[in-house]
Length: 404
Image 1 (cartoon, helix red, strand yellow):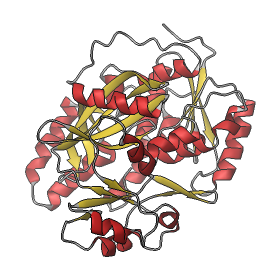
Image 2 (image 1 turned 180 degrees about the vertical axis):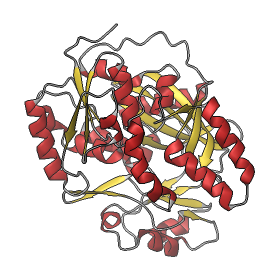
Image 3 (image 1 turned 180 degrees about the horizontal axis):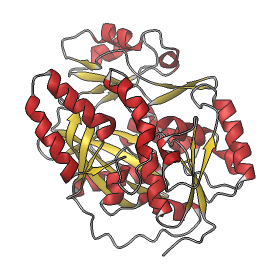
C-alpha cells in the first residue's frame, strides 16, 4: 500500500550510509524526503531519492543552536516524522523531544529517560540483573578513586567501557572514546590502566566508565528491529562476514543470520525497557551457543541497508508508527539470510589496506569478488550521485583518519 502524496519526512545525518538507506526506502514508498545535515552536498542530499535539503548549525559545536534552528524549521514545514541515525543526533533529539514535539511533528526517538535506560550501560546492566538473560559481571565506579574497590573484587580479565557513546558538557556533544586498549588482564593493574584510559576527560569525570567482565566469545552478533511499548514487532539478525581490523572490529561485509535464542533474549530486553521505536541489541555468542548481552543502542544501526534488502523494511514500519497507524508488518515468516552487504567506503577499503600492510596480498581476490557477490551501501547504478559526497573524505580516512 502506497503512502498519500502529501506524506513527507525529514531525515537527518545525511552524511551517514544508513541515513541514505533510510531515505531511499521511504522514497520508494512515495514519501517525500528532505535530507538534513550540518553542511551542503552530503551523500543523502545528492541522492535522487531526496526532494529537498535542510542545512542546520553544527550539532557538535553548538547543540542549543542546532535545536533552536530545528525547532524553527519544524514550525515552518509539515513533516510526518523526523528520523536520525547517529548516536549524537539521536541523543540530542531525545533530550529535547518534549520541546520539538510542541511543533506537532512526530520525533522518531524514544523519550529521554527511556533513551537513557537503554544507552547508559550503567542503568542498562543494573536493570538487566532482574531479567533472564546472560550478562557479564559489571561494576559502575562512582569515581576514579572507586576503582580500587573494583580491583579488589574482580577475579577475571575485564574491559573498561564508557557508560554512553555520547556525553554532553554544556551545549556540546562529545564522543566517549578511551585513550588506548580497554582490555585489562587478570594480572594487570586495573587502577593504573583505568586512570590512563580516562585521562583528564571532563566527560569521564562526570560519568566514570564501567568495568565489565571480559566474555571470551566466538563472535559478536546483533538483533535489530522495531518495538512498541516493550513488544518487539519485527526483527532482523546479522553477523559479520568480514571485519576491520581483521583481528576483530567493524563489519566490512555483513549477512543475515537466524538465532532463535538471541531473539528470545532480545524480546526480554525490549520488554524490560518498555521500548518504542527502532533499536539495536548487541550480543556475544559463546562457544556453547549462548549469548551474553553487550549493549543496546536505541537508534538505527549501521547495517540498515542489509536489513531492508533482506526483507525487513524497518523505516517504513517506523513511519507508520509515527503516523499513529498500526504498522503493516507481514506475518513473521522469516527474512533472507543469503544477502551480503558491503561497506566499501570506508571499512572494506581499510580492511584491504590492512591486509596489504601485513603482506596478505591474496586478500585482493575476495575484495574484488565482492563487487559481484555483495550489495553496496553507497554504490548504486540507479542512484550514483551520493558517491560524490563520499569521495572527499576517502583520502583522509585511508591516510589514517577516523572511520564511522
